[in-house]
Length: 328
Ligand code: 8YV
Image (cartoon, rainbow, N blue to C red; front, side, top):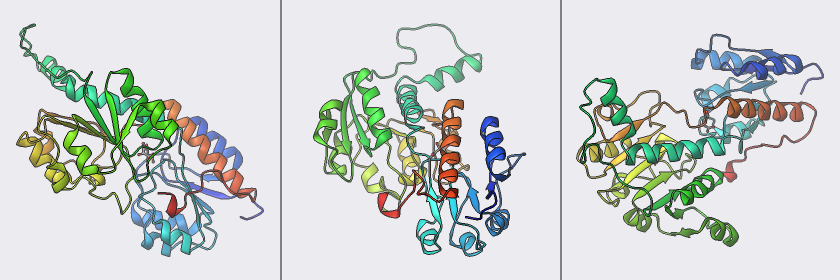
């Protein structure tokens, strides 16, 4: 890092207190109108910057990194997922990558529960009906959803967010099951009263609700493939607050339309911000625009983490949230 203040290029508009603090600490180039950067703009940014602060909407691929100037030493991403960054190329070029883990765990877990409830209890459908002005009044068989208490929830990915979902789920009377690359420590399993399924296939075939909470990596791309989706029970619902790429969205859409899966709650999509138009026509899905971690508190915490990572790095130390390929 240079002895002068590092030039930090921020690709999107961040909360005001974060931008103000960054301006105080660094030579900061902000994106005041918040328009997502094109690949050409990203290339221009990495040519000049000492530090780049991207978000999930920026694709920092090998082509972008190949154009990075000699000063680019740190990519301090604003977010937890790092699937928008080519980590291997960054490492080869000696560029450190950091993220903001931990501070969006609770908000994302809240959104997972919100989607589970919204799908099982038909919240969005009911809301649409009122707004359409067609509600005729209460009826004993009107808008019947399904009780979640007593049902089996299968969590795919028992990291921080998966565990936060498990804690909430117990409060709602769900029994907690999970699949993870590695079994979590026994104390954690005990605390969460969670049952481990080594076989994802087996877990899928036995659950009432499935929640995707794993990162998107080459190993989890289409983890819920057509074959695996077909293992789910017809009355089951699927919720995804992680990454769209983990699910074969076309197959899921077809199965939802054919009621081979009862419902889905999706906060993320395979080709964001594009959403499969066929999903829009289905009543048994609740669709949200990637807002799982969208709280003001969370965004400020994320920004503070970004600042700490940059400051620590600029001061010549190892930043706390370094991302290593092997960690994912
Ligand atoms: C963030 C997310 O809002 O952190 C993540 O991985 O998916 C989101 O909740 C986004 O990534 C910010 O870049």
